[in-house]
Structures are given as C-alpha cells and as structure tokens.
Image 1 (tube, helix red, strand yellow):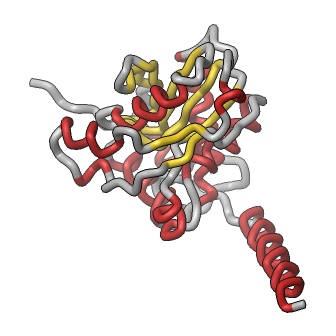
Image 2: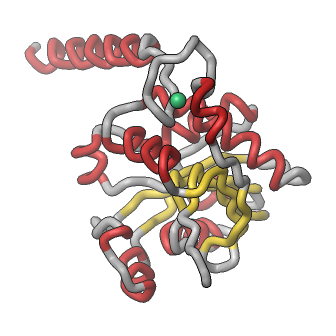
Length: 230
Ligand SMILES: [Zn+2]
C-alpha cells in the first residue's frame, strides 16, 4: 500500500515537474534576460554574436560542426545551461545548432540523433543531462528520432581539469558502452555534445558507436574551444 502510494506521488511529482518546465520563461541564452516566446536571443546580443559554424574533427577523424567559439557570452550560455538549471536554453541552442548542421552536412540524411551521456553519479548531482535536452529539441526541429545509445561506465574527472592531451585521452578511454548494438547497424548517426575541446570525449563516444557498424557517425556541438596559434 505504501509502495502504491509512493508510486502515485512520484508520478504526480513528475507531471508537476514537466508542467513546470513547459512554463519556464524564454530567455536569451547569452545574457539571460527574458525574451518573447520563441525568440532565440535578445536584440543586443544579436549584434555581438560570433557565428562561426566551424568544422573540425573529433579524435579518430569524425567530422564535427560547432556554432560558436567557447568564449565570452557563448561560454556563459553553456555554463548557465549546464550548471544553473537553465533548461529553457535547450530550444534556442538546438535551433542554432540545426542551422550549422544543415549548412555543414548538406548531403547527409541522419537516421538517428544521440548524445554524450553523463555518468549516473554526475547525473544525480546535476539532475539532468544538458546534451539529452539538446538531442530532444533537435529531434523535433530536424524531424529525426533521438535515442540514448551510450552509457558512461567510468566516473571520470572533468576533462577541463586535465591539461595534458595524453591525460585527457586516458581519462575517457573505455569510459562508454553501447546500450543496444543492433539498433546502430547501418544507421547514419548524429552525435551531440555541448562543447568540443580536444575532441577526446566525442572521439571516444564516436569510436564506441562505430564498433557497431553504423553507416556513419558525425558530430555536432554548440561551442568549440578555439586554440590560438601564433
Ligand atoms: Zn541577450
């Protein structure tokens, strides 16, 4: 009886939570001020945004397209989205990513959108996976189904805390496992993350998916850490 009651309560909480999410006010991801429903960003920010629609490669040679450099207001947007519960940024960010995906992969017809998973421990502390929110919105925008395809089995240190590329590579090596191998066979997969820096995390995820013989794996992120060269 107690168990039954708890189940109903859980369901009520989930429904209330979902209803609450639906009423989160739209905000400009770059400065956080409220904007009109459906507006991607405010007028002030529209004047200073640096769309680069950059194309690069994740480790292992997997194509990756990104919308912005990971600097200034673009970086602040990712930080609030990830750590400050700004789940409503998912829609405007996904819309901007959709433009860069269509521009950089004009010939590609994807069968499946998927995303970089969080370890369950980190998921518990953060409460949500920002990449899954992006995948869900992109799925609706592009009309392509999304699916959780990977599990993170190793609780790793955040990549940005490791400075040496070799340490970053080692940190994520073997950290992911495929959920359903059959599902991926011959599929053209679009893999999402919020940012790409050295490309080891995305590369490791893409390589793990690639072992299941998909037709292709291509990546997309919102931001990219651009290393200045002299
Ligand atoms: Zn703004």
